[in-house]
Picture 1 (tube, rainbow, N blue to C red):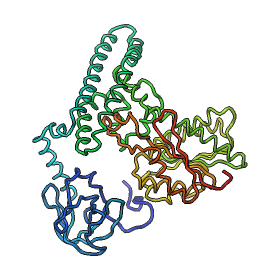
Picture 2 (tube, rainbow, N blue to C red):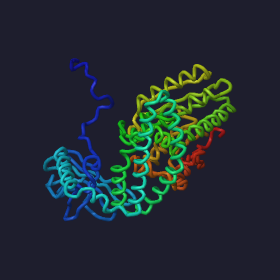
Picture 3 (tube, helix red, strand yellow):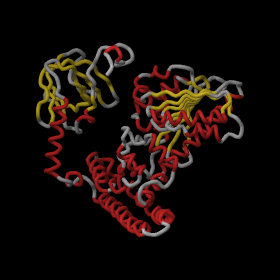
Length: 488
């Protein structure tokens, strides 16, 4: 045990402590809690023990900053707080405002509110059963879902029977590998056709929040457990690090092999790694290598080194291959790799340093262990030498428009004159979103090329030029933003 003087505690600037706010959607179910003010009900956005914020229509008045108002916070028809509150601040958005208030007459019992919500959820589950979710799901989607469940269940049983028979032979592993290849050849075209039809069946559901939620719940209940035999699908669904596309998932996708404990698992693991979203990961790696070498030639023509920053670097395979595939030694490239996963950075550092020792002449590497939330909230966290090429290929499709534009502006500010920012985003429209969105609960902001341009449009007012390029697998678009100056 350490003495008090040895404890590090919180590091950073000394600031007044504030109770941590939690998003309502992370603590309670949607619509489980509302704020009542002057007889009107408003949905809560986030809450802490001493204050909350709530959403208000753009033109509805609730009071001015510092006004004291009487409010009631209700959770499942039970009062969690009733009393005075002071309006502390207001944030405007295109369609609504977010108003924050400080509670003056007591505190919120957040654990108690969560227990009440969980108890109500149990009562609802016992009373309504699965009919509650299925009631909002159109028959067209139920039909394709049952077809997918029957399809995967059939092959899980059939392949297990043949695998058991093979296990009794003297050449079991060879025969098992042969069975995997024969099975995927037969299953691949039918599975591809089925998942495309499933995606088409979900398009009409987008107009109804209830239908979408019911379809997703039914899919995760009936189909997702069957596909957990595939390691990449199991990891993406359970999200042990909090997000689906973590380092381990990316490693599976880069390997693009047959992994799993059963023949069925190996087949569907490989099929998942062949999905356009997975193939696009490998294709964007090649596009980034191409852009890196092009920027290297640009800087070399100026007799200047190239400074490259990768945000959300993962295993940084593109850097390793950029070095290892070069026919001659690569010179004067200085990489900065940023990621929020320590293991990803560790692997990237080891592999890139080994490649640098082999092929990097006067090149260097630094790795920054930094959460993306920290980066988004604190633009100063990336202060340092200006970069000639900045790329981010796996983060922007998790950000709404406002946060994406703010981060893009931050990256552009860190760009040297003449430099290039390349940002990747899952493209729309597409016919391959169903597996990620409905089976794996892997939500992304798919964007059209015009929507991607719109993210960067504010930068054109300061002279930036824009280009959209799609990687070869057709799953991700890249917005390429060039800063003026520097002889670009």
